[in-house]
Length: 160
Image (cartoon, rainbow, N blue to C red; front, top):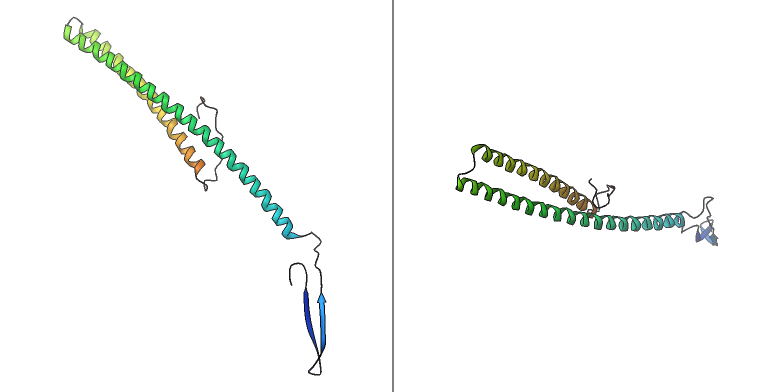
């Protein structure tokens, strides 16, 4: 069988002697239509869908990278602010210790304020680092062709 039918020569033998040949040609047309053409059109449709999904994934990756850059900038800004506040508090503490004019209660209050600000900044830093790790994880999942996971990318500025 070749393609959609038979096209072959057959020998006819009568009493152990060749009596001739017959050429048999058939055409096979299945009721459901040409399966090969159907499979080929299905494959083309799947390839188009995959190309569209790849483009969407690239766009989502670009958004994730932009969001990652925003988070890194905020983290750097907060670290700079924390270092500046720490330096100011250290200077005030050193000034108070050097002058000796500050009472012990005021010194304890300054230390408590310094510790409170450190904890607040550490919490903010930790939160931003968590967001950064999440963005990096999503970016890695987007670049992995075997990931198979789809997710929603929130607009820049919103938390996950």
